[in-house]
Length: 332
Image 1 (cartoon, rainbow, N blue to C red):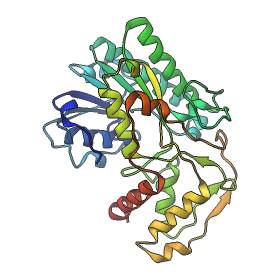
Image 2 (spheres, helix red, strand yellow):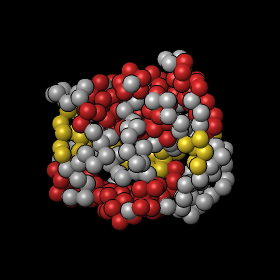
Image 3 (tube, helix red, strand yellow):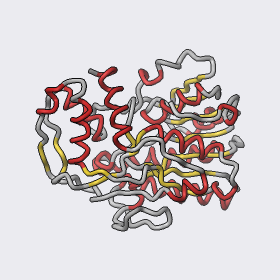
Image 4 (cartoon, rainbow, N blue to C red):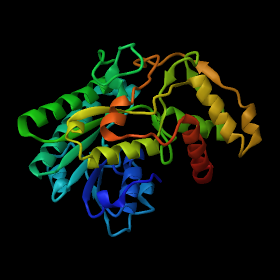
């Protein structure tokens, strides 16, 4: 668990949308540990009840089961709330390509519902999950917040529209927001199952079953893999920052390093082999590239460092080691 001043959030009422999901449930757990009062809004479309088990009976935790596509539910969830950490969305580029309508309804209409509900409830600040997919076809590295390309998927379009809506809500209504462009987040509680499972938990589970993971392409595609604790830190910094220049901005939420898929599988095998030496013998296979995937992603984190005082706690191997330990203990 990350180190953060309790005084900044103790007693505050925080709504975490998508609070039963991977990032959302980690946020709920941390906020409760810091003595905040947490409201979780989730429809369990992609989140899981077992992610809430360790704190669901805590008196500072309230679950509202509902869908952000329902404006009345959003308004009820925002009543009396100080801050919103908006994580609810339908992630995954392939999912959005297969079903762009539902991704649009959840990620754009649902986002707008939450903005309206939070504004009307007098919420102090609305921090939302943006995405590195917003950089689209831009080939410039590292990615700098103010320089983006054209979107490459319906998902990317929805996350860019979120940023546009947030900007308009500040200009039209004086409503304060901060967007966090997540770069390939991984770590404890990330779901390894399902058609749209992220690469790290999916590969971990396959290695543990002695199954060969399939890399899309030749394995040279690279990503700025970002451990969950770095993301938790960014959410808390965005929520509590007293720097007026930091508000109504978007920030890369990453480490500032990139790892290709071959290197990633080698790291996973290395640390999984510490628990089971046979995993070192599992071979990796290669398949075609996925539609909508960008070849390389690497974030500049200078803006977050300067305006939010962000200091990432975990590089890729630190995070892999902790994530592998969690999966081995909880899912083996």
